[in-house]
Length: 300
Length: 236
Image 1 (spheres, rainbow over the protein chains, first blue to last red):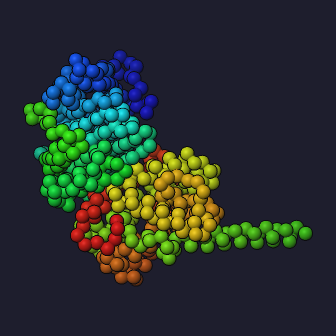
Image 2 (tube, helix red, strand yellow; image 1 turned 90 degrees about the vertical axis):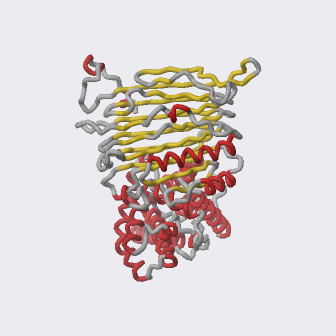
Image 3 (cartoon, rainbow over the protein chains, first blue to last red; image 1 turned 45 degrees about the vertical axis):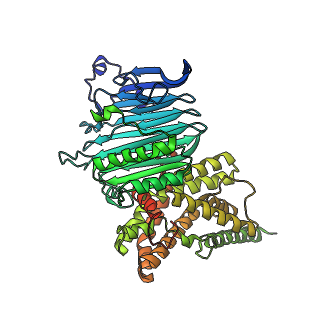
């Protein structure tokens, strides 16, 4: 990975006007959230906010009250990744912090340049004992011909809790521009106290038999995965989801090793998004004893 | 002892060891091994129910896909790594790969299958005075398969071929019961997939650690659907 983050050295490279196969434009964001006692109230504060390149956060919101979950919006003004982009997001929650991280818009993965240069996006989330992280980015749209690697690593410690999702749309649905070439390498790893609980890898190559084969992607142009760790009554949670969400061969839910996993494979971005949203609304009361509070940025 | 006699003795011993290793492998991959493997379909029954696999051609594609995108990237390379770790008595690595394998099980049923077959194989090995005194927890089927191969001096490549063979036979037995598929048609699929088994082993032995991991989102979805399937013959 070191080479991927190598900094351009020439002046032309600094300006970004470089289109050779080795160019890299790096952006980093590092967030730290901590639980503080203030005037007899426990408050989650954004205590670390370091960035380099076009990745920012807005001032946090407290729509659930000052002692409630801290909502943070991650901003990436370019709105998408082009060849050579290397985004790295880190967030660390200290003991007993509670944060919801989301984005104001879909993340776009643009078509690779004429050199076929890859982009990369890595996300590393650390959650300390007693802390709760909700990782709810808006969907990711991969344009035809996009090439890159996306990796999400979540490290839980002790009884840390985490719920998150990834909604991926292949091709542009509105313009009828399907994903017929390119390559997306998507990885997830979830650990507790350094022991793996769940990991997964998807290599999406439209020409490969697994892209159409039912054991693999089954030609699905939209896929979603939702995970939830820290449910005290997982069987009840599963039953609630099966009763509340519209039955369909396109999604299913299971629970193993303390991780609830809901998956969707289909063709409808809105169906996938509303499935995840409904699941979160069903789970949050069972999981945290709190009603779901829709981040207002999703409504704009 | 003259040289010729000594060479003959060495050759005889080698042959004897090879013979015992081969018999050990045949015993380990036999459908008669009483660990209850016949009760598990690894998502195949769900593929029938969902209409993804309706005939022998669909089945051949499905099996080839699961072999290349599943076994060759998950069970087989982990088997090779765990066998070596058993041979070196490296308990940390055994635990690492056991955890890794279980973390790649996407659904409750796929996870249970490993654990329950592992527990059954552990009981069987105990009754044969072959069980390990130490090892990763919870014991997985793959981990104990690797242990048994090491104990029986089965080399890595035959061990992987044997594991893949047992998987294929078991999947075809599922299809014969549930699709249904004729027994001759099942043998025809074996004829067709024999080269794929050796290619899967080649791939498994060539992949570095960071390229491992099954890529079977459809199978995972089907397996999770199986939990609520109305009528079912198999536990996965």
